[in-house]
Amino acid sequence: MEHVFGYPGGSVLHIYDEFFKQDQVKHILVRHEQAAVHAADAYSRSSQKVGVALVTSGPGVTNAVTGIATAYSDSVPLVVLCGQVPTHYIGQDAFQECDTVGITRPCVKHNFLVKDVKDLAVTLKKAFHIATTGRPGPVVVDIPKDITANKCEFDYPKAVQMRSYNPVVKGHLGQIKKAVQLLQEAKRPIIYTGGGVILSDAAEKLTQLARRLGFPVTNTLMGLGGYPATDRQNVGMLGMHGTYEANMSMHYADLILAIGARFDDRVIGNPEHFGEEQRKIIHIDIDPSSISKRVKVDVPIVGNVPDVLDEMLKLLDEGFKADAGLADWWKQIDDWRGRDSLRYKQSDLIMPQFVVEKLYEVTGGEAFITSDVGQHQMFAAQYYKFDKPRRWINSGGLGTMGVGLPYAMGVRFANPEAPVACITGEGSIQMCIQEMSTCKQFELPVKIINLNNGMLGMVRQWQEMFYSKRYSQSYVTSLPDFVKLAESYGHVGMKIEKPEDVEPALRKAFTEYKDRLVFMDFIIDPTANVFPMVAAGKGLTEMILAEDL
Picture (cartoon, helix red, strand yellow):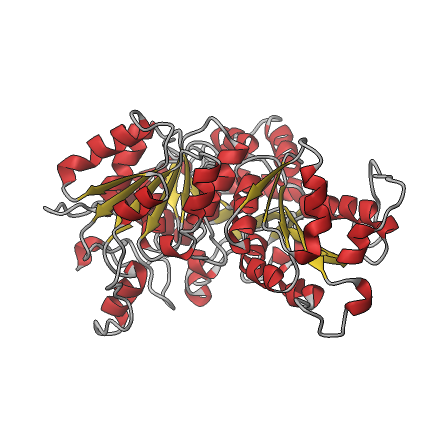
């Protein structure tokens, strides 16, 4: 453990006193507990390290719950240390007391209440073990103040074993053989991958398998970067705002190889529509509860993704030959690609898609990109081509506005030499904008790409399309001057209003101001919408394309 993101308070002052006495673990002082957990979350997502957050009792814990739930939804390994009132005060409605275990139980992989200082070391070992093994997730350790005041001989175990917790790692060989047989017989296959590929560090194995098979690959929002976006076999992201070719391939495939994905509602649309086509489904996942949860599968394989893919590659090396019909399948996919579903209209105003395309060009596709939640998130996913894993950091499952800036902080601490850009909107950025103070304290040179359309874009888009243009509370009519606000925090601010100024501004931010935080306020076309789009309750083939309007 190298970094801890936190905010002090009465019940954790003994811990903070120990921080003062050492310099091995660096504490990062945030300005809000929610940001502490988000930063620790991104620290984990963008590296192979475990993020750690430290918050005080009562409101410190409740402020952290949004961050904990965000990490839980996306299966991110995290350890959150929470202060608690002294043991003898628990249950007495003491000052800043709350039931941390009860409040967090629905949104953690596990939580602990430490009742004896002698149990503290082994509990922390268990917390890290549980967070990182099996299907990863956040673990909360609730520590009363008197426990942190007591002393005992330090004994941190090298390993722990828990009788009730033994996640499966190796997939069943018989099931893997069945899967390989189906792969050899498929005429219209597709490989459908999710965040499990990223979290298990299976991107390299996936790439080997996909290229060995010659099958098309589609990624979920959380799976971007698991297979190179610029590779011809990648048909793009699928789902609500996926490409035409990805959604059509997914719907009409006769075999789906699902890897570390969960057939989310935003991915397959209406399950009844999805079930209209006859197909075989192979599903690889570390979590047995995710298999056949929404879609019935034919060959379930429970196991760690890279281990299972390794076994598949060994079996394929024994003489795999793709079905002759694969060439016809690729011809059909190329026809679907011809629709160019990500094409967008040009305008005298700045188009948000154009900004993301230029950001990709300026950074050479090498930046870590964090995003908030909304239209800008989808534009980032659609137009920034991720060829590497752990470069795309966003809240997929919970859809938490406000994560972008603290995510960028966490990424930068985990990857201190890397370029980091936060793509956000004028609504989302204000939810954790106080973290610009943290960025100043620690001199974090992140670049904020604010796609400013003066309204809550995704809300406005839905109201335009499905609520007869009744724009209820989607306007943001009292926006600050973001340039002056950035400057007041000691950073660089830019306002960009013309398309021809987009690329120069980005290049200046990443070169002349390489070592400074730069807040770029791009005033974009307020009518820009995200397409393609699968409306709620519709099927994957019922996409709305920009050309249809």
